[in-house]
Image (cartoon, rainbow, N blue to C red; front, top):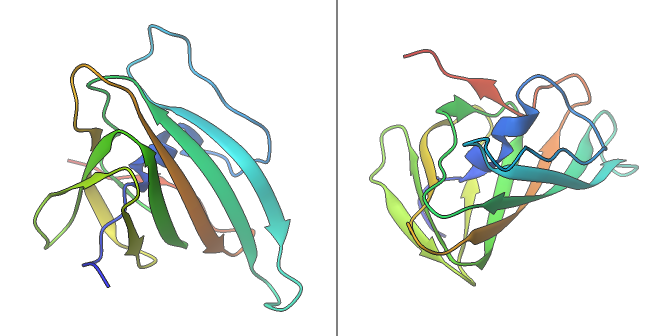
Amino acid sequence: MKALRFCAASLAALALTVSASAFAHESTDPSEKVTVLQDQMLKNVPGKKAMMIEVDYKPGQASIAHKHEGTAMAYVLSGSITSQVKGEKAVTYKAGEYWYEAAGSEHLVSKNASATESAKLLVFMVLSPDEKVLIPLKN
């Protein structure tokens, strides 16, 4: 298993809300495009829900430094993404690679590793309905 890292920064657009609706930025926005694909309560894990989120990074885009209250797993669908969790080295993941991030991990770097090509990430999270998907970190 790879070191704790998660490019969930990809979830920066969901900083203030946990919603099943899709959220897209204007083309001039420097943030990534985040689309919630599923948001479902788990029958076999009372008090928890699962979310499936697709994150699209334009060339050179990066997310703000943040942490997640829930546990997350990420899979790079296309392109490459550089991710760094506090206390770990930055790692660049390519299409087909994946990683795990424990709840509460501080995600310092999450960005498209390419200045010329887009990147796409699939994120799966498990959290309580009252937990925030993303909490921006203060400098």
